[in-house]
Amino acid sequence: MHEREDDMFDQNGAADRPDGNARDNAAPIIEIRDLNLWYGDGTHALKDMSFDLYPREVLAFIGPSGCGKSTMLKVLNRMHDDTRGVRIEGSVLMDGHDIHARDVDPPLHRRRFGWVAQKPNPFPMSIWDNVAYGAKIHGLTGSRAELADHVEDCLRRAHLWDEVKDHLRDLEATDLSGGQQQRLCIARALATMPDVLLMDEPTGSIDPIATQKVEDLLLEIKTRHAVVVATHSMMQARRVADRVAYFHLGELREIAPTEMMFSAAQDPEARAFIKGKFG
Image (cartoon, rainbow, N blue to C red):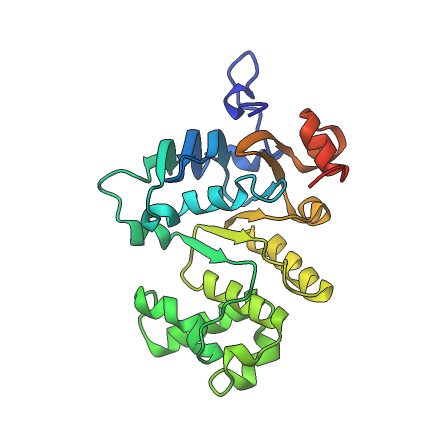
Protein backbone atom coordinates (compact mmCIF):
# COMPACT_ATOMS: atom_id res chain seq x y z
CA MET A 1 0.00 0.00 0.00
CA HIS A 2 1.36 3.42 -0.89
CA GLU A 3 0.16 5.21 2.23
CA ARG A 4 -1.05 3.77 5.52
CA GLU A 5 -4.00 5.53 7.11
CA ASP A 6 -2.24 5.01 10.43
CA ASP A 7 0.34 7.56 9.26
CA MET A 8 -2.20 10.31 8.60
CA PHE A 9 -1.66 12.10 11.91
CA ASP A 10 -0.16 15.45 12.82
CA GLN A 11 2.70 15.87 15.26
CA ASN A 12 0.29 16.27 18.16
CA GLY A 13 -1.34 12.93 17.39
CA ALA A 14 -4.63 14.45 16.19
CA ALA A 15 -6.22 12.46 13.40
CA ASP A 16 -6.36 14.07 9.98
CA ARG A 17 -9.67 12.60 8.82
CA PRO A 18 -8.85 10.86 5.53
CA ASP A 19 -12.25 11.66 3.99
CA GLY A 20 -11.61 15.38 4.38
CA ASN A 21 -14.74 15.90 6.49
CA ALA A 22 -14.77 16.04 10.28
CA ARG A 23 -18.25 14.50 10.62
CA ASP A 24 -18.11 15.22 14.35
CA ASN A 25 -14.84 13.25 14.50
CA ALA A 26 -16.76 9.99 14.29
CA ALA A 27 -14.84 6.83 15.09
CA PRO A 28 -14.45 4.28 12.28
CA ILE A 29 -17.19 1.71 12.00
CA ILE A 30 -14.71 -0.77 10.45
CA GLU A 31 -10.91 -0.90 10.87
CA ILE A 32 -8.84 -3.16 8.60
CA ARG A 33 -5.21 -3.74 9.56
CA ASP A 34 -2.52 -5.79 7.79
CA LEU A 35 -5.11 -7.96 6.08
CA ASN A 36 -3.92 -10.74 3.77
CA LEU A 37 -6.03 -13.30 1.92
CA TRP A 38 -4.95 -16.38 0.03
CA TYR A 39 -7.01 -18.76 -2.09
CA GLY A 40 -6.43 -22.50 -1.94
CA ASP A 41 -4.32 -22.55 -5.10
CA GLY A 42 -1.80 -20.26 -3.43
CA THR A 43 -3.03 -17.03 -4.99
CA HIS A 44 -2.24 -14.09 -2.71
CA ALA A 45 -5.35 -12.07 -3.52
CA LEU A 46 -5.12 -9.33 -0.86
CA LYS A 47 -1.80 -8.05 0.44
CA ASP A 48 -1.29 -6.08 3.66
CA MET A 49 -4.56 -4.13 3.43
CA SER A 50 -5.03 -1.36 6.01
CA PHE A 51 -7.81 1.24 5.92
CA ASP A 52 -10.87 2.46 7.83
CA LEU A 53 -14.52 2.90 6.93
CA TYR A 54 -16.44 5.72 8.59
CA PRO A 55 -20.17 6.14 9.24
CA ARG A 56 -22.12 8.12 6.67
CA GLU A 57 -19.54 8.03 3.92
CA VAL A 58 -19.29 6.51 0.46
CA LEU A 59 -15.94 4.79 -0.06
CA ALA A 60 -15.27 3.78 -3.67
CA PHE A 61 -12.92 0.95 -4.66
CA ILE A 62 -11.35 1.49 -8.08
CA GLY A 63 -8.74 -0.42 -10.05
CA PRO A 64 -8.42 -2.84 -12.98
CA SER A 65 -10.28 -6.14 -13.11
CA GLY A 66 -8.86 -8.79 -10.82
CA CYS A 67 -7.17 -6.33 -8.48
CA GLY A 68 -9.04 -7.42 -5.33
CA LYS A 69 -11.99 -5.00 -5.11
CA SER A 70 -14.74 -7.64 -4.93
CA THR A 71 -12.62 -9.89 -2.73
CA MET A 72 -12.22 -7.08 -0.21
CA LEU A 73 -15.96 -6.37 -0.23
CA LYS A 74 -16.63 -10.00 0.63
CA VAL A 75 -14.16 -9.95 3.51
CA LEU A 76 -16.16 -7.25 5.25
CA ASN A 77 -19.30 -9.37 5.65
CA ARG A 78 -17.54 -12.75 5.84
CA MET A 79 -18.81 -14.03 2.51
CA HIS A 80 -15.59 -16.04 2.17
CA ASP A 81 -16.48 -18.27 5.11
CA ASP A 82 -17.91 -20.96 2.86
CA THR A 83 -15.19 -20.76 0.19
CA ARG A 84 -12.89 -23.76 0.43
CA GLY A 85 -9.21 -23.09 0.87
CA VAL A 86 -9.45 -19.39 1.73
CA ARG A 87 -7.00 -18.25 4.40
CA ILE A 88 -7.18 -14.81 6.01
CA GLU A 89 -4.62 -13.15 8.27
CA GLY A 90 -4.71 -9.71 9.88
CA SER A 91 -7.56 -8.00 11.65
CA VAL A 92 -10.97 -6.64 10.73
CA LEU A 93 -12.62 -4.80 13.59
CA MET A 94 -16.23 -3.64 13.50
CA ASP A 95 -17.09 -1.22 16.27
CA GLY A 96 -13.84 -2.32 17.88
CA HIS A 97 -14.63 -6.05 17.87
CA ASP A 98 -12.86 -8.71 15.78
CA ILE A 99 -15.38 -9.96 13.20
CA HIS A 100 -13.65 -13.38 13.16
CA ALA A 101 -13.76 -13.85 16.93
CA ARG A 102 -15.33 -17.07 18.19
CA ASP A 103 -18.20 -15.22 19.85
CA VAL A 104 -19.29 -13.63 16.54
CA ASP A 105 -22.25 -15.37 14.90
CA PRO A 106 -21.61 -15.07 11.11
CA PRO A 107 -25.31 -14.78 10.12
CA LEU A 108 -25.85 -12.04 12.70
CA HIS A 109 -22.71 -10.28 11.48
CA ARG A 110 -23.89 -10.45 7.86
CA ARG A 111 -27.20 -8.93 8.87
CA ARG A 112 -25.32 -5.69 9.53
CA PHE A 113 -24.58 -5.50 5.81
CA GLY A 114 -26.70 -5.06 2.73
CA TRP A 115 -25.38 -6.46 -0.55
CA VAL A 116 -26.13 -5.21 -4.07
CA ALA A 117 -24.59 -7.16 -6.95
CA GLN A 118 -23.69 -6.03 -10.46
CA LYS A 119 -26.60 -7.83 -12.09
CA PRO A 120 -30.03 -7.28 -10.52
CA ASN A 121 -31.05 -10.46 -8.72
CA PRO A 122 -34.55 -10.02 -7.29
CA PHE A 123 -36.22 -13.06 -5.77
CA PRO A 124 -38.78 -14.74 -8.08
CA MET A 125 -41.69 -13.45 -6.04
CA SER A 126 -43.78 -10.30 -5.75
CA ILE A 127 -42.33 -6.84 -5.23
CA TRP A 128 -43.83 -6.81 -1.74
CA ASP A 129 -42.33 -10.16 -0.75
CA ASN A 130 -38.87 -9.16 -2.00
CA VAL A 131 -38.72 -6.23 0.42
CA ALA A 132 -40.67 -7.83 3.29
CA TYR A 133 -38.65 -11.07 3.29
CA GLY A 134 -35.63 -9.88 5.27
CA ALA A 135 -37.66 -7.92 7.78
CA LYS A 136 -39.87 -10.94 8.44
CA ILE A 137 -37.12 -13.52 8.91
CA HIS A 138 -35.24 -11.21 11.27
CA GLY A 139 -38.34 -10.16 13.17
CA LEU A 140 -37.72 -6.46 12.61
CA THR A 141 -41.37 -5.42 12.73
CA GLY A 142 -44.01 -6.20 15.34
CA SER A 143 -47.20 -6.18 13.30
CA ARG A 144 -48.54 -6.30 9.75
CA ALA A 145 -49.09 -2.57 9.84
CA GLU A 146 -45.47 -1.95 10.87
CA LEU A 147 -44.28 -4.29 8.14
CA ALA A 148 -46.38 -2.47 5.55
CA ASP A 149 -44.93 0.86 6.66
CA HIS A 150 -41.42 -0.57 6.55
CA VAL A 151 -41.85 -1.92 3.02
CA GLU A 152 -43.19 1.43 1.86
CA ASP A 153 -40.34 3.30 3.52
CA CYS A 154 -37.70 1.11 1.86
CA LEU A 155 -39.33 1.45 -1.55
CA ARG A 156 -39.58 5.21 -1.11
CA ARG A 157 -35.93 5.42 -0.11
CA ALA A 158 -35.10 3.47 -3.27
CA HIS A 159 -37.16 5.95 -5.33
CA LEU A 160 -39.37 3.10 -6.50
CA TRP A 161 -42.61 3.49 -4.52
CA ASP A 162 -44.49 5.71 -6.96
CA GLU A 163 -43.68 3.35 -9.83
CA VAL A 164 -44.85 0.14 -8.17
CA LYS A 165 -47.28 1.03 -5.35
CA ASP A 166 -50.31 -0.21 -7.30
CA HIS A 167 -48.74 -3.58 -8.11
CA LEU A 168 -46.90 -4.58 -4.96
CA ARG A 169 -48.47 -8.03 -4.67
CA ASP A 170 -49.64 -8.82 -8.20
CA LEU A 171 -46.43 -8.10 -10.12
CA GLU A 172 -43.42 -10.38 -10.08
CA ALA A 173 -40.18 -8.56 -9.36
CA THR A 174 -38.63 -10.16 -12.42
CA ASP A 175 -41.19 -8.37 -14.61
CA LEU A 176 -39.71 -4.97 -13.74
CA SER A 177 -37.18 -3.24 -15.97
CA GLY A 178 -33.49 -3.76 -15.25
CA GLY A 179 -33.13 -0.39 -13.55
CA GLN A 180 -36.25 -0.95 -11.47
CA GLN A 181 -35.00 -4.39 -10.46
CA GLN A 182 -31.73 -2.90 -9.24
CA ARG A 183 -33.53 -0.27 -7.18
CA LEU A 184 -35.71 -3.06 -5.78
CA CYS A 185 -32.56 -4.92 -4.79
CA ILE A 186 -31.38 -1.78 -3.00
CA ALA A 187 -34.74 -1.54 -1.21
CA ARG A 188 -34.41 -5.21 -0.25
CA ALA A 189 -30.90 -4.56 1.09
CA LEU A 190 -32.13 -1.60 3.14
CA ALA A 191 -35.01 -3.64 4.56
CA THR A 192 -32.76 -5.44 7.06
CA MET A 193 -31.63 -2.07 8.47
CA PRO A 194 -27.92 -2.61 7.75
CA ASP A 195 -25.08 -0.49 9.10
CA VAL A 196 -23.11 -0.83 5.86
CA LEU A 197 -24.24 -1.22 2.25
CA LEU A 198 -21.82 -3.14 0.01
CA MET A 199 -22.24 -2.60 -3.74
CA ASP A 200 -20.28 -4.56 -6.34
CA GLU A 201 -20.48 -2.75 -9.71
CA PRO A 202 -24.14 -1.83 -8.98
CA THR A 203 -24.68 -0.02 -12.30
CA GLY A 204 -22.60 -2.30 -14.51
CA SER A 205 -25.59 -3.85 -16.26
CA ILE A 206 -28.17 -1.04 -16.37
CA ASP A 207 -28.69 1.91 -18.72
CA PRO A 208 -27.43 5.49 -18.13
CA ILE A 209 -30.79 6.83 -16.91
CA ALA A 210 -31.12 4.01 -14.39
CA THR A 211 -27.48 4.55 -13.41
CA GLN A 212 -28.16 8.18 -12.55
CA LYS A 213 -31.09 7.14 -10.34
CA VAL A 214 -28.89 4.66 -8.46
CA GLU A 215 -26.16 7.26 -8.01
CA ASP A 216 -28.70 9.75 -6.64
CA LEU A 217 -29.78 7.05 -4.21
CA LEU A 218 -26.25 6.56 -2.95
CA LEU A 219 -25.99 10.21 -1.98
CA GLU A 220 -29.17 9.88 0.08
CA ILE A 221 -28.39 6.46 1.55
CA LYS A 222 -25.12 7.66 3.05
CA THR A 223 -27.03 9.97 5.39
CA ARG A 224 -27.95 6.83 7.37
CA HIS A 225 -25.45 4.17 6.30
CA ALA A 226 -21.83 3.71 5.35
CA VAL A 227 -21.50 2.61 1.72
CA VAL A 228 -18.66 0.77 0.01
CA VAL A 229 -18.96 0.60 -3.78
CA ALA A 230 -16.63 -1.18 -6.19
CA THR A 231 -16.81 0.47 -9.59
CA HIS A 232 -15.02 0.51 -12.94
CA SER A 233 -16.42 3.98 -13.69
CA MET A 234 -14.03 6.76 -12.74
CA MET A 235 -16.74 9.35 -13.25
CA GLN A 236 -19.11 7.45 -11.00
CA ALA A 237 -16.49 7.31 -8.24
CA ARG A 238 -15.93 11.04 -8.63
CA ARG A 239 -19.65 11.80 -8.50
CA VAL A 240 -20.65 9.73 -5.48
CA ALA A 241 -17.63 8.97 -3.29
CA ASP A 242 -16.26 10.84 -0.31
CA ARG A 243 -13.03 8.88 -0.55
CA VAL A 244 -11.49 6.65 -3.21
CA ALA A 245 -9.23 3.62 -2.71
CA TYR A 246 -7.07 2.46 -5.61
CA PHE A 247 -6.37 -1.30 -5.80
CA HIS A 248 -3.61 -2.82 -7.94
CA LEU A 249 -2.65 -6.50 -8.06
CA GLY A 250 -4.11 -7.18 -4.64
CA GLU A 251 -2.55 -4.14 -3.00
CA LEU A 252 -4.23 -1.01 -1.73
CA ARG A 253 -1.84 1.47 -3.32
CA GLU A 254 -3.54 4.70 -2.26
CA ILE A 255 -6.61 5.98 -0.45
CA ALA A 256 -7.56 9.65 -0.37
CA PRO A 257 -10.44 12.12 -0.48
CA THR A 258 -12.03 11.94 -3.91
CA GLU A 259 -10.90 15.24 -5.38
CA MET A 260 -7.38 14.73 -4.05
CA MET A 261 -7.23 11.31 -5.69
CA PHE A 262 -8.44 12.59 -9.04
CA SER A 263 -6.37 15.77 -9.11
CA ALA A 264 -3.17 14.78 -7.32
CA ALA A 265 -2.88 11.02 -6.80
CA GLN A 266 0.52 10.16 -5.31
CA ASP A 267 0.84 6.61 -6.66
CA PRO A 268 2.01 6.51 -10.32
CA GLU A 269 -0.17 3.48 -11.10
CA ALA A 270 -3.21 5.28 -9.67
CA ARG A 271 -2.48 8.35 -11.79
CA ALA A 272 -2.11 6.24 -14.92
CA PHE A 273 -5.30 4.31 -14.24
CA ILE A 274 -7.34 7.45 -13.57
CA LYS A 275 -6.05 8.96 -16.82
CA GLY A 276 -7.21 5.85 -18.71
CA LYS A 277 -3.75 4.64 -19.69
CA PHE A 278 -4.64 1.06 -18.71
CA GLY A 279 -7.38 -0.99 -17.11
